[in-house]
Length: 219
Image (tube, rainbow, N blue to C red; front, side):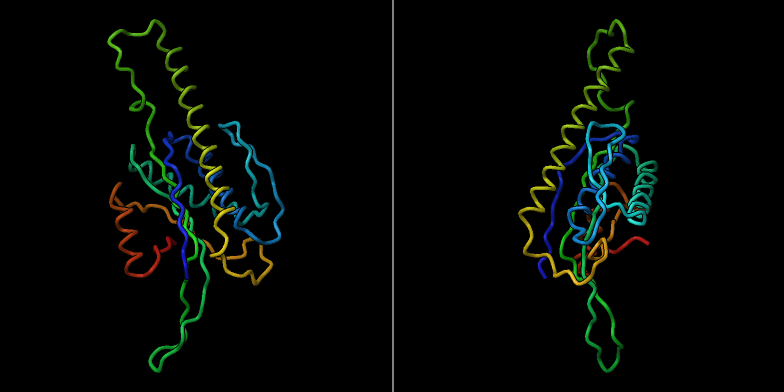
């Protein structure tokens, strides 16, 4: 089965922006790939002038928030690092039984989205290198923060357009829908674990993909 992948544009975010950014991106992807009977719900970002659509499913919202909390917990232990969150869609099929083994199931991944984030702390990001101290440091910091937030909002809009472009262009690989669930296909959200290093996690995922055909799911 052909597995399409989409590497989304990297976003530079501060810790307090992670939740809003990931909710916006993950719910946008899932909504466009739900393919079931959804109850669209418009949601306004808390930090940005952006509105996105959720599927209106409480269990889905809970699962997404749970994974976001895991990622935030990892970030707290690994500050100022680049990392990824991977959203995968797959089918579950039965493997043919052999004389030694009973029937087993396997996951066939047909689409994977990589959300690339560079998490930075305010104290270490965007420091002024001007030798002359500003007349009003408070105003200068506020202006810099406002400018950075506006740049992130613009970049987040670009990511949303990238998602929409991808889902409109990539359709042939999507399996046939065989149920009426809100989310027609199983999915998983993979985040770095507490034992992963900043650069080693991506390498570890690639190794697992080569060995098993897909990244392992965090329980």
